[in-house]
Length: 252
Image 1 (spheres, rainbow, N blue to C red):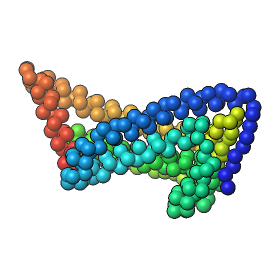
Image 2 (tube, rainbow, N blue to C red; image 1 turned 60 degrees about the horizontal axis):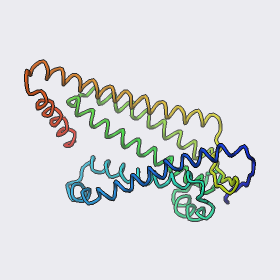
Image 3 (tube, helix red, strand yellow; image 1 turned 90 degrees about the vertical axis):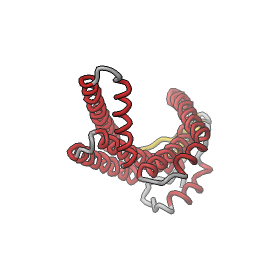
Image 4 (cartoon, rainbow, N blue to C red; image 1 turned 180 degrees about the horizontal axis):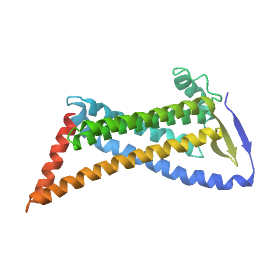
């Protein structure tokens, strides 16, 4: 059963304005992602779908289309003019029942979309992390130490993300608010869950910064070696190093 609350408190006007401002960015992001997909779909079929598939092919396509799904899911909960009341039965049929989400305290449309969006983000982050690990492993000439470090930190980070996502699914609720005719989605979570969500963002940011530093370090190291051993044609040598690393990355 959908929980819909009507309120007419003027204190909600700043929140309504914030929702409207955020909705502009959400719609723009969805249009941009969809437009890019439409422009490059022919090349995607020619260069990816018709070629021999590998792990990187699966990861690329998964991230690409899950990203489009994530952008699409952001629209209903972010655009104040969209009412989720009429979509509850459809979402319950295709999301709640197949995935047995009967433990959700509230089956309101906005909450179900929020949960699906949250798990989509978890999957996309995990796949992007795998791509980063493969790339860094190639850049470090298949170093075993780097691979072990990246895998251990990746597992710790993503297991924590999965646990937090599960707690959100089991111990949160949502309701659709109608303030001055504007539809808003409010997610109700305990304080510890809010803290855990913040920790997931912090850990993810730290992991990405660490991987970025590793990539910068190996790039600087290669450039210094080229500068030391090559008096001329440095750009060409840099290109050769990058291509060599890219070949190792693609073959993996």
